[in-house]
Amino acid sequence: MKFLKIPAATITRLSLYTRALETLIKEQVTVVSSKRLAELCGVNPAQIRKDLAYFGQFGVRGVGYYVKELLFDIKKILGLHREWKLAIVGVGNLGCALVAHENFTRQGYRFVAAFDADPMKIGRKLVTGLLINPPNEMHNICRDKQVEMGVICTPAEFAQDIANRLVDAGVKAILNFAPTQIQAPDGIKVENVDFSVKLDNLAYYLTTG
Amino acid sequence: MKFLKIPAATITRLSLYTRALETLIKEQVTVVSSKRLAELCGVNPAQIRKDLAYFGQFGVRGVGYYVKELLFDIKKILGLHREWKLAIVGVGNLGCALVAHENFTRQGYRFVAAFDADPMKIGRKLVTGLLINPPNEMHNICRDKQVEMGVICTPAEFAQDIANRLVDAGVKAILNFAPTQIQAPDGIKVENVDFSVKLDNLAYYLTTG
DNA sequence: ATCTTATTGTGATTAGAGGCACATGCGTGC
DNA sequence: GCACGCATGTGCCTCTAATCACAATAAGAT
Image 1 (spheres, protein in one colour):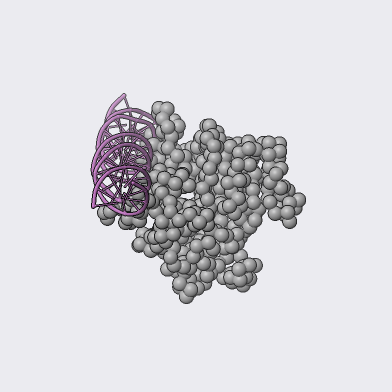
Image 2: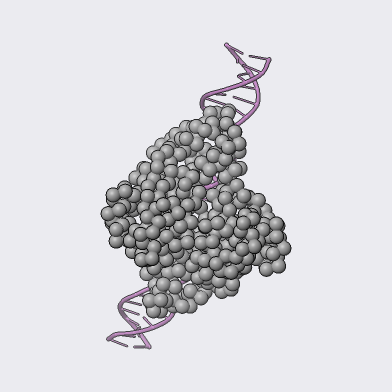
């Protein structure tokens, strides 16, 4: 193992591995080979071994990987051994759905603040008990509650402005559900969840065969 | 332009271009250079020209691209000049939010059927007026309404079963929101919308810097 | 009509990721 | 204690995708 730049694709796959490993634990499997894990994740076995090699040696030759240990190690690599504090901006249908969704609650992702520009919503509470605040309090509340990641669920035209405010409030990572490309300064990581793009991919596939 | 295999990444970018072009139209811009469009989409200018070159010649040398024409052409390439009929499976919080979301309604994506296993929901209607049906009627209803794409919004453990049923019902493309890898036969295209993976990417980024 | 300027379209180059195949080394059985 | 089998870890090769750089060419000015 050397100190190389780690491909983004590797990190994405590590996340996939954790899910497969969690399933294996539920099935009381204690040891897994790269071959078996590869089947579960739909990737090449050598790929898995190489992905792990970036971070050290985790397997036992002739045996495979101990499921529980490997899961623990990968979670540690990804930073999932701790809790993360999130803020949601835009609590329409989608935003509300996300706050309660298993994808967030499953791991240590916890919403500690919510914002919306709609005066009818401000001051009310989400089903989780979270108070909805106006956007102009983002700076104070995010700093106060030490928000680390922001989730944007507004219409596309407001997304960039919200992103700017989040950055201003000290948030270093943004998950963007709005169908638009967000510009952010260096040091801020933006990930887009773009199902409109995925849909277009499907449409293209069905069109051309 | 030759008959080459077109990278999936190219299709994804084409989708990005359509969005930027739609924004430009709103701003009454009539001509755009690959340089300007590249800035809006966060890609390399040569990348745009090369992506387009797979499908023909769309620009005017020394001038750029006519926004309206280019948008029309790309939409045609992606298959967005027509309407697509979708079914949603799993109308919990997330499913309901998606049915009403701008990402679907913006283009010609139209939900024509909804399914859920919850007996309390079956027979009721969504806010859009769409009737919720039991999963065992998927085969008949999807064929009857000529559903082309399926959207899976169930918990992870049911996703594979639902995918099988969709395939059985003649659906050729699946958009999967459940946090699990779905196996599908050849000829069926599956796209995953996986925000749990995106979150993990952010966590890794914040952890390592 | 010719020259200038701007921007496309594309061949050549570079970078990077994925897969193969084998040597390494751990566990087990004799 | 030794040999054998099996799965990892990794150097090397291949293939694909992104970027560069330049020739082609259209519009407008002189």
